[in-house]
Length: 381
Image (cartoon, rainbow, N blue to C red):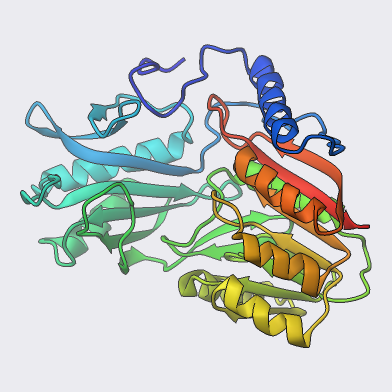
């Protein structure tokens, strides 16, 4: 469907029928887990797919560079850092694509030059647009190498005027080389501080640099699965590790559970607390700090019936899992993983620590790619 397929490093599976993509992802997940967990019973359910595999990414990201003397949006070519200018990106939401192009036009009008790797100057690096799947409202963030830009206020006002869907415009500063998108400093240019996204009856308030699932539809599937693995009434509080803005913690607390959410990123913690206040949700408490440090304290003080893990792509550190499984010892562990190899490592350690794999639910968060998200339910033997 996309004219850039094969040249762009974004989607490598567009040539495969979508139903067959789901089958292949199930096979890849099973092959990875069986190879690393010989003899372990692995009840893998059929993958939950998207009803429409196009326009699913509510978080839109483009590189900014120059093409034929003009600013251009693009992605990297496969396995490289070579810029590929794009005319379209049909896996993004149409609103996100449109807002990104409007941002580019405003930047060009104000003669903002693109950033050049290697310290050779330039300003504009990335444009990131988040679109609410519920309201269609958008949050636009320009990532630049400088904190101060000429006509900054006008850039924000003109984008809002050109795109009624935009409720907030922000500038993030990242002067470091490399492929990391966001830098440490973000300032609002126009509109609202946070974007509102509704999932599972909770209205989440999300800052530009807080992590939130790329697909709102996929995020809803994740929450539905985790909620299914949590009994209606538990005998103790739920521990939500790597909680982010509270994607699981807030809906569980809304359902009446007591939840302790642990998150390292202070901006995500602020968003999570504001989300709880906005929704009038009681029963959830945030701890701001590293999961590893917090677990040491919790092992001495509290007991949890259920623990939810949603770690970064590389999975949980080994000793963190050991501390959770052998000292805190919750009855159930729900492991949300975006990488089958990391999930296999987690499951190997947990099964050796007295847990049994009850069910694994794969969810397709990124159609037309080999990316596999899974939610594993484990029960203490």
